[in-house]
Length: 284
Image 1 (cartoon, rainbow, N blue to C red):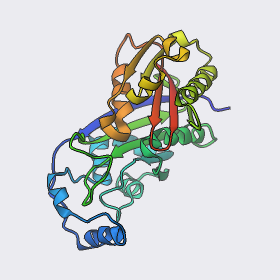
Image 2: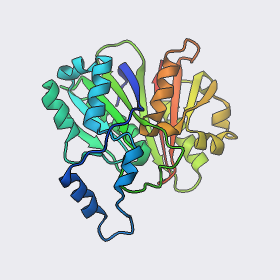
Image 3: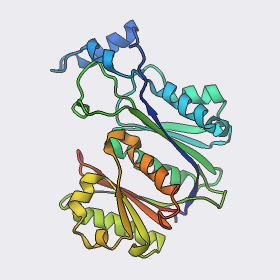
Image 4: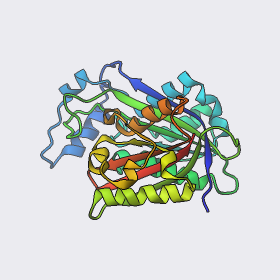
């Protein structure tokens, strides 16, 4: 049985400043080779108005700004979750961090799951931290938006690059607790599938729906607001999807800091591109 792990710290960060595009011949060749034989056009001019961040730099900034880098030597598992590709595919982020901070952790990246990647990563972390020899874990969630080609998910309303850092500990026994993570493909009804995910999380936490504050993707709210499980929750809030993969954690951090947020928070995400419902339950 998977038991709860505790959230010792959670930090979020916007990266709104702009850097000059990198002029690296090997990187330019990589992107041109990547696009060769496709209808997508390489356009370096698109980078002129972009932030031009790379994940290893974003990781260092959020870790050192918040002091979480001091925890790296104690971390047993470190995962990176993102949707958009790294602007520096030549750098392994987790290996870069291991070398910089002298970490001894197991590490890998979780992607190709859309903006649901952080939920899958938290699911993996929870299972790791229930095994002997693993007590502390860290999840870095980030998305950078600088590409020399057009991306359908990015338009004129796109927000800045974003990141979140979540530090988990099995042994602390205090603070918010991650009680469960669940996900389900919606083969038919998204509303019914969301209800199934919600019921499994509620059942595992053994708590009545009326004690739960719901934090939900606005598109999922639109589809589920007439469902009985949705109406029975204590309260509901939507998060801003423009913060990409880290979006839910900006709102979750705010809710965890409020005294009236309730004892339980259920975070529900809809990944529209592949019809997946993701959810997690937290005891505040």
